[in-house]
Length: 103
Image (cartoon, rainbow, N blue to C red; front, side):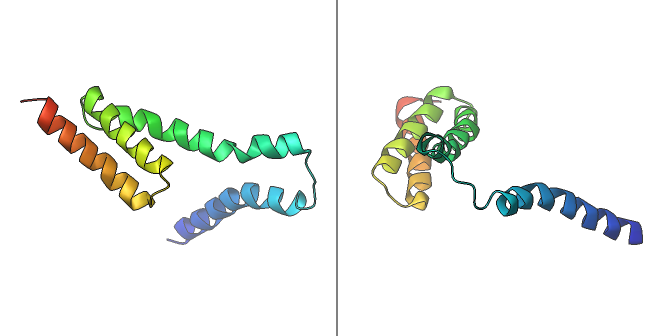
């Protein structure tokens, strides 16, 4: 049991240090405007790269998955709450599946 606690503590340190050190050491570093602009888009690009494959494989039918994804993108572009965007995407898949694909 003591070994398990030590393992958890060291795993926490190994995970935390690489995230904390750049924030502490590079806190006062001023980047050129181009790099600041470039880095500001990385979270959106990473989020898109993580979510898009999941959308295509979510329903078992790529057509309904794309329909739900399109509904979610449109609702997101309207700057609605993320909960509404998620439920809208689910509703889009449900409606598209039930009205355009008969089983």
